[in-house]
Length: 546
Image 1 (cartoon, rainbow, N blue to C red):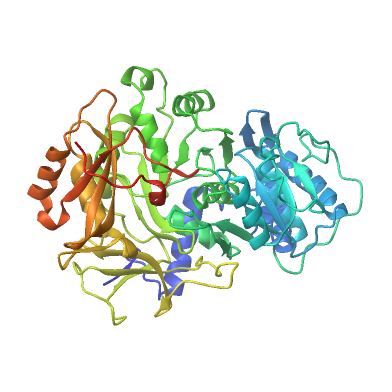
Image 2: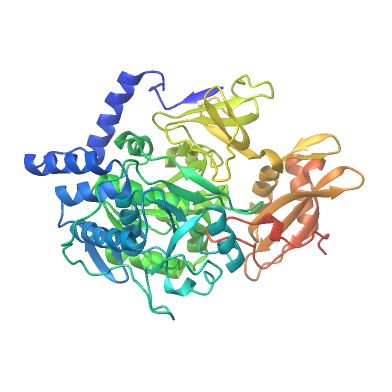
């Protein structure tokens, strides 16, 4: 069954254009202003395109004195960011960076990260967003695979970057490196020298996949085609130009990057902190009066793990939107978070490859906490069977997505399967009678046990609902008798005792015997990558619990 965004089908261009304008006006992206500033704003967008460079150049013409980014080093206006980006672009040019050069960025969340993307955009250089959680060998391999020709990194990552060729020019974005070298400029100084002309083609962003099932791959993100791309997300998440957006999700991650791009499109203020710490998030929301938070699910889990007395110390009433993406959330986390902070939670289901597929709002999740939501404006979701035909509501099949932000392929030349103009997500699911998408799990997570097809997610949802269980992950393991079986890795709450037999009985009662995890392994924590996703290959060998 194909699901479209509300009553606005993807096949109605005129209606979609009208809806796009309405959404952008509501968000404050399109608003009245001085004619001369609007003219300069449009001229900057025409010169640099709808890129990070173009967005900040246009914002500089429209509202130069407005605060663009706040980090531990202070606040920077749109004028500051634009001038610093121009300075860095000049310095990169001197170091040999040209249109099409791939520049690696290995940074925490701070204004220097955004500034580096502005500079690369002004040169038409491609940006490779490197994961701060990668080991030295992985950084070396990712840089080689993606043909990185220059590097901008925080000083703390100097050692893990030691394997890169010495001829690769390096810039420090934050901190003091052991070896002196050029730095990202932190204080604005008017650019006096002649600058390179706008590039013939805009630079691209390359995002590394999470690497939870193998080595991270470089995925080429498409250049936004204009404000309609922002309008798609804004059709389901009610952000506004007046927002102060705390971007806690790593900017090297697709969702953190989305927070930066949306904030830029709306000329909103971005608030960043280099390291995530759950109480610091609440403190920052209170001190900066943040109205929106971009996070990944494990961050919400850690906030909810804080003692109630700590959570209640801070005034978070300014929060209107908590936008989350990256992995599945348990119904208990969703309901508990909204009961604590109000109905402000929005959950986006998508991937590096398809960008967004569906977005669940508070009302959707109150009705069905396990739902992935509905497609936003201009997005189509279809459930396809093995023959490539669409399946009716309620039937489970492969999830395919169509929108204007499907990725341009991996840097190794491969891509994702497409059918009917739609791209596969690699997940299976169904659309219910209300038009809400429900994700059963990854195609490759399906286990055939005793001839029955079963998925880990329903098992995880059953186990995490048990008293004493903090979180759980379930995966398939080989079994001599049934071919495969489930193993459950359970993290109890501090001080709680979880009985493995009780876990098995709970699953048997709710889902049947083929879904019962024969192995129940108790762990103090789950192995995660830098974006909070569980890395299943790093789980210990399964062995039945006591």
